Image (cartoon, rainbow, N blue to C red; front, top):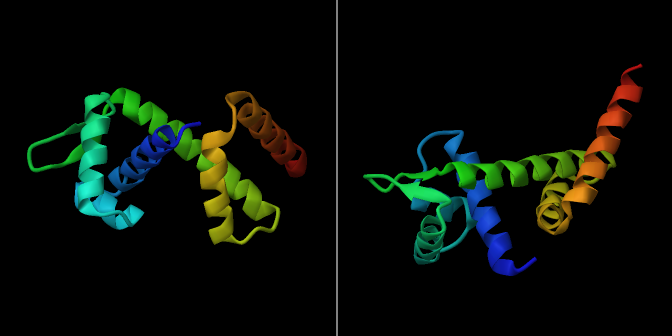
Length: 127
C-alpha cells in the first residue's frame, strides 16, 4: 500500500472518530494526529478534491458517503485487531499502535478470515 493512501485512510478514520464527539475542524485533526495545521490543510484539500470530505461554512469538516465508508472500514479493522491483540496480552497502547500498522496492509481476505476466527472463537467461549 502506498503511504499517501494509508495517510488518507488515517485522516478519514480520525475525522470519523472526532465526528462521533461533535463537529470537526482542521485544528481538531491537527491536535489529535500531532500534525501541523498547514499539513492538515493540504491533506483536507486533497480529501475534498477526491470527494471524501466536504468543508462546510465555518470550516467544519464532514465525511461524504464514500469517505465514511472508507473510514468505517478502517475503524472496524482497527478496533477488531486492537481488541484481539489486547486479548492476547498485548499492552493497550502497543496494541493500538500495532493495529494501526496492520489495518492498512492486511488484505480483505485475511481480515475476513481473522474476523471469522474471532467470531467463531467468541461463540465457542460462550457455551
